[in-house]
Image (cartoon, rainbow, N blue to C red; front, top):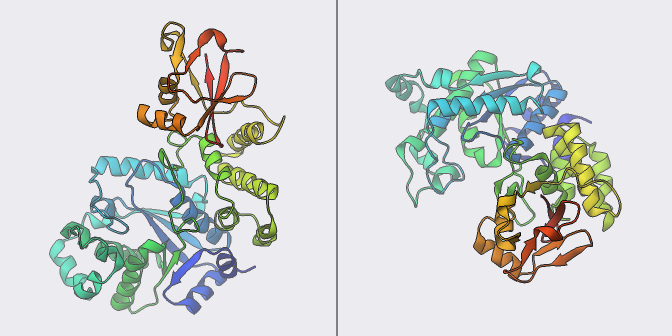
Length: 410
């Protein structure tokens, strides 16, 4: 199957500047494209994972990516999708984040067949007056203000520094065209305004073909962004989101989302995934297990994926697997006052609840059950205590809701 058809059938393509030219470029192979990553955090998240898998698909089809680390644009901050100004980072923080990004990218894309650039290498050296004369002349303020990335900020205030972001990102495309012959920019669909601005700049200045392609954002059926939990974003860094939690996030996606996630995020042939669209009931649980395993393997490696799968089987199937890889918290002697620990303190200690107030709400809503070895029993009293001498085999399991399990070791 040709690349363009595969991307379309997976529902990945959102918008394109020149559909026929882009289809020919993708299917022919051999071209150079780029994708930018602003280093606003110390880890990539699942939204980045989607575009990294697209980059890998394009590599496999013979195209070469430029992975552009936004060491310059991060100094300014992208206003797209924001209601407030992004936190300003130091150059040291940005460079450190960028290094971590490259390490994580290497698990998914082929870095030996990629070009890595940092836009701070040229943006930080620009002469402001020359930039205004040579580049600024090609931008219409009226047109810029009509862009969605700016319109969404007008009510609360758009800073002048953010207003320059579109010009800087557009200049990136021009620079990469001149240096590497790059003719295509990729991005999430929230980057559409910036991308078409860059393609237009290359065409105006160089008189050559330049194209933009955006991909569908990872969203639920009701339009909410995926990749968020009660603890925050689902990160690719194992320290921020441990492999088991990463696995469990995908194992617990809604029935209505699983097939779409398989299409967009895995490398399973599209024909196989389309045959799963008729699956129902327990078959969907199998699809979720496949999804969670494949994504955990891509991000954390086969060994961690196998551990997470084994732990999940212990929870979702009778008699299968082991709970040894379940997230766990160890209680010390000092955690037991008079030989017991209150359930509220225990939920906060295990991070199953972010606060004592939330812990009480979970109990009031019958959201907590505990298995001391004889099966799960509900906890309905916020004054309930776990006595150390009642714990068999030195451990027990707490379940929050229907799908979150945590082992407590003594």
